[in-house]
Length: 275
Image (tube, rainbow, N blue to C red):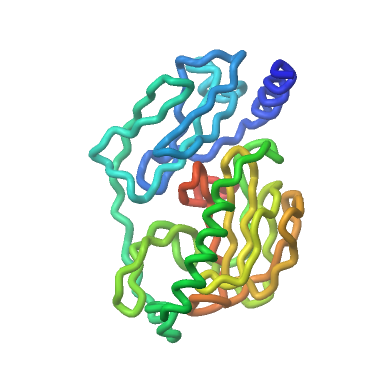
């Protein structure tokens, strides 16, 4: 059974020629050859307490360096002055990151409760946040070949990843996704094969869908006007999941799209086929 599992994993990864663009910065992705591993054993890797995606190096430029690669999401909070530590099968691996200065964005939110929630709002968001956190921790067999994705909707990029955000001049967490401006009702598609692991109408995020692409990779879609899928649905690349809207905390109609690796939000631009 183990031999069959390894053959399946190697077969899937042998076709996974398209890796995300490596960017060793906070909010970026590193591709780390696991040099002290053997092809006969699928390693288990961990970074900052979260399990990390591991793929075969077969048919990649890393093939001569190691049999397996860790594809690691780097949190926006990572300190560039500290060496990053990953463990795989009891072995330690280290990598450096460089700093990045993200721009600031100041937004005016008309609904003041979306800036300073009242106690009932805060309690509601606490429950919704727990549901979303559980979805981000999903781990399943990959449903697609490769890690490159398609854009989930059409429109200009209105707010890039990583912006330092201020709502009504009050500082908030950095922007953890990519905003795509589009008219209400514009179709949203699954950028890659996935399983729907959560849907909801959340206080801040509005109507939301979370997809599990397998191997610790998830994606988030917020502020929809309509959700067209249900939890547990299996989607193919290009299948419609909803429509652009302006629900939740917004200043206008758009899609907020996030990509997560090892429970870490990273820049979606690193995964696009075309840039």
